[in-house]
Length: 341
Ligand code: KG4
Ligand code: ZN
Image 1 (cartoon, protein in one colour):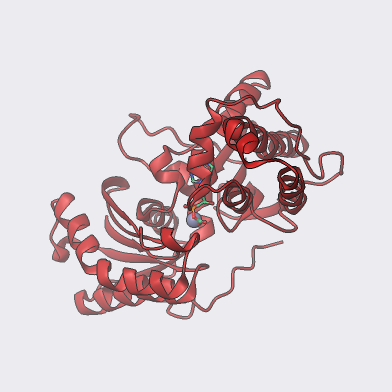
Image 2: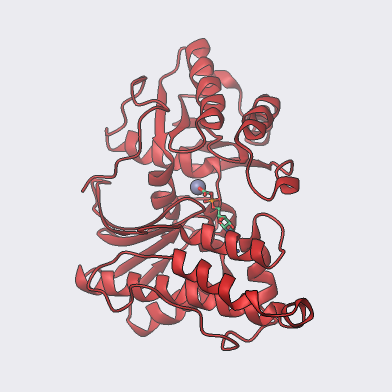
C-alpha cells in the first residue's frame, strides 16, 4: 500500500510517502516568513503553502522513488488548523486524488499527533510501537491533551488545558524574554546552560483531582517577575530564567501524565506534538517512566513537530483496520475538532 500525504495546517508545508507502512520520504519546508512578525500570520501561511505545495509534493515522490501512478491512496490534514492553510493541502490532495482516480483519506491533525509514535522510519526493526491501551500526552502550539487510547484507535480525552497550550506557554513567555518565534526550541537550547532552581514559577492544578492543565497563570507570573528586573539582570540570567520556566511547564506535564497512567492502570505512555521535541521534557519522562516501570514512546523530534509522515501513518493505520472513510469529502476542513468524551 503506497500513500502520499500532505500536511499544511500551520506554518510547515510537508509531504510524505509511506510504502507498506514505512516512511519512504518526509519533506518539510518550514516557513521563515513569519519570524519578522513574532508569530504565524494566517494569510502569509496560506500563500506560502500555495507557493510551496507542488514542489514539496514532487520532492516527496522523487525522494521515495515512486511515480504518481504507483500511489494507492492520497491523504491530507483536514483540520483543525488555520483554515486557509489547511485548505491549500486539502484541495491539492483532493484534486490529485481526483485526477489519479485514487481514494482520498482525510486525517485529523491532532489524532495524527497522538498516533505519531507509530511512525515507522526503519530506525527500529521491527518497529517499536506503543502497546494498547496507552495514555497519550499531546503537547503542541495549540493543544495540550491527555487521552486514553484503545486498540481500535478510539480514544477518550481525560484531560486538557483549560486555557493556554504548553507550546503557547513556551512561545509567549519566550517572547517576553525577547526570544524569536517560535521560542520553544530556543528556550530548550538556552535552558541547557541555566539553573532550573533559579526561580520557582507556578505549576498549576497539581493538587486538583483531575488531569487538566493551565498555563495562563505561568504567563502572568513571568510577566510579573520581569516587571521590576533591570534589562542587564534579565540578560545575565536569561538561561536561568528559561530553565526555570521550562522546569515549571515540563514538571506539570510529566506529573499529570503519570498520574493518569496510574489512574487508568496502563503500562504505556506516549508523548507527542511539537513540545515533545523538548529535551528536558524527554529527559524527565525517561526518568519518571523508568522509575515506575512504564514503557515510554516519544517520536524522533522530526516527527514531534508538524510533519506529513504522521498524517500518512494514521491514514495507513485506519485503512489497515477498515476504519478510514476514503472519499468522505464531508469530513473536510470545516469539521470542528470535537474529541469524543
Ligand atoms: O506540533 P507543532 O509543530 O504545531 C502545532 O500543531 O501547534 O508544535 C509547535 C509548538 C510550538 O509552540 C513550538 O514552540 C513548540 O511546539 N516546540 C518546542 C520545541 N520544539 C517545538 N517547545 C519546547 N521545546 C522544543 N524543543
Ligand atoms: Zn501539530
